[in-house]
Every structure is written in structure tokens, then in C-alpha cells.
Length: 486
Image (cartoon, rainbow, N blue to C red; front, side, top):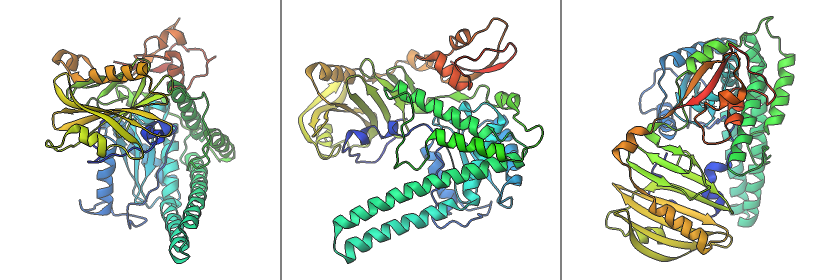
């Protein structure tokens, strides 16, 4: 969404450049404590309390709250029903839908729950959303945020003792690395525990306990599709430093827990009401955050358009636009405040990157806007840098390549020249994508419905993931299905 990220943004390695692409799409249940917050927070709090400050920061990071009365009503009712069946029914939970296409949900120890509209778009019925809510309530009732905070303080303390008292910084760094590994394992155990608590709560509340495993499987399929779209492997890679267990393990354990749960004779899934609630919901990028369309980024609010080199896949990440290209190339696009009196080239040379040799700085213009270009060379990667002053901001593009050949650099420079002011007709012609709920007719097939999707590639695969359909599944006449439309 091209947010400002401060006056200085430093890149060390390509992993940092592509940080927005590194995380698998998944239910990242953050249990970060918002300062010294009590287990049960009062529902009426002042604007300057830690709880409200944290809430404001979350809204700012995720594009604000997504407002939809019908959706809010459904989630409020589900939250109340799950809360009654939870281990801590005394906590007054409050749920907020975040205006973000990312697939995420998390909880504060106060009982504030957050789900993104991207997560809601992936779910297929009410029981799956109830599973997400029950999982987050499990984190709160088990006091995971406080336990994790204790572990983090312990890890830092151990490292400090080894480093300062024993005067051995190297040993201190090794100790901290080991502590972080233990912390990651601890976090994975917290996720599995929240899964167990969530499935049990789900069944007690009268929802289908298999909603948890179905949604976890959907997240796994979505992660694989996303990885394939960005040139990765078809499957989810296991990162042993990750705080979340691999999706197949979670699906298997959630399925086992559902079998053991004491579910009602007719557990609730309520697919129709859920689909009705999300019908018309914005899908993908919000207009205020700009749009990715193929290899173009269009920001109708700020009023510019930028085109990545041919073959690039772009993603509108939380702090920047990131992209993966062919032949081991990548890019990152963001904005920053640079004083009007400071040359843009000086900013590129001194403030943008560390650990690399910046050279070839030249002050230029791009379609009438003041700009600067430079190159940077690291040990393993080479970079083409650009900064373009547009309005009150400088928009920065960092291209990365293993081998910055003249041909690749020519593509990068052509991409820089694509940055221009948006015409009035272009600004009004670009509309956000939305979810449409359609009823299948006799003769409809997966191919015919997928062909109606407003997506640039992998239409059938995206249709299958969006609707939790196996490749061999048959379309049922009269059945309701999700489509992405403009």
C-alpha cells in the first residue's frame, strides 16, 4: 500500500528486500502483549490507555477497519456464541474486521480480536470463522501473550548475562540464537494448544468441529498457490525458526481433535448466511491503498501509475510493493519523506542501503519529476536504485539481480521511466475487485465459472482454492459459489 516507513529505510540483503513475500499465507495468531495489560481489560477505556493505543496502531498498520453492518452483526453473534462456550466466558471479547487483503487473525490479551477481510474471503462457512475466533480465544484464555513475553525477557536476560558478566559477546549472541530457537518452538506449541482449545470450544458451541481442519487446509492450499504464483515451490516449506507449525501437521491434529470432540448431533455450518454476509466485500487491494493489476501498480488516490519489468509478479504488501521476476530478479517500491533541499541522489547514496557499494549516482528527471538513479553492488546481489519526487514524497524503487547484465539493467531503467501521473480517465476506470456469490445453473462447470473470475492467471486454481473444491469436484446446480469480479 506504499506507506511511509520513516526517514531512513536500510536494506542489507535480498531477504530483507523481499520480507513481505517470505511469510507463508497463514493464520498468524499474534499474541504480542500491549504493554502491562491486565488479563481482563475494561470495555470502556480512555484514548490514551495502552489498549487503545495498540488498537490504533493495529488499525494504522492494516488499512483501518472494514465497515459492513451485516458482516459485523454475523461476527458479533458468532463471537458471543463461541465466548459462552470458551474457557473464559467472563471476558468481554470485541472483534474488528481489518481492511487488509492479507490472511491473518490475532488477539490481544485484553480480548480484542482481529480478523482481516482476506481471511473472511478465504473461509467458506460460519463454522470456519467460528473456528478462527475460538482459536484466538484459546490464546487469550491460555495467557499465551504473557507466557511469550516472559520467555522473551528470559532470552534477552540470559544473553545479557553471558555477554556482559562473562564479557563474551560471541557467546552471548550464540546464547540468544539458541533462546530464539527455543522461543520459536514454544510459539509453535502455543499454536497447537490454541488449535486444541479452539476445536473443543467449537464443538461445545454447537459448530461443526471440522471447520478448523477445513480452514487450515484451505490456508495450506492458498499458501501453495501463492508460492507457485511467485515462482516458489508448489508445497509449503517448513521453517524450523517459524513460530507456526507446518499446515499439514495442524490439519492432522485438528482433524483428530474434531473426532474426539463431543459434537452435537447436527453441528452448525451455516454456509448460506456466511456467503450472504461476505457478498460484495472488497477483495484484494482497497482503492485507498492502490491496485496491483498484473505487473502494474495504480494508485488512483495519490494519482500515479508504475509498471514493473515484463514477467514480474507484484504484491501490495503492508509496507511496500514487492515483486519477483525471472532470472533471479526482484523489486521493492515504497515512499519516504526526503527534505526538499536534500538531493535525491544523496539520499540514495547514504540513507537507503548499508553493506553495499553505491556508485553511478545521477540526478535525472522521470516524466517531468525530479529523480535520481544509482547502482549498488553487494557480495551476492546487485541493485539498481531509483528515487522519484512526486508531491510531498519520494518514491523509491530497489531492483535486485544476481547478475545485473546490460539487458536486465535496461529493463529496470525502462521500468523506472514508466512512473507517471495517472490520467483522469485511468483513475476512474480502475475499480476494486469484489466477491460475488453466484448460483450455479445446469450445465455450469468449474471451467465456465472460473472463466468469469477477474484474475490475470490461474483462474481454475484460484476458483478451487476460493471455494475449497478438489480438482475432481463437480459443480452442483443450485449451489452457491464465490467469484472474484470487478
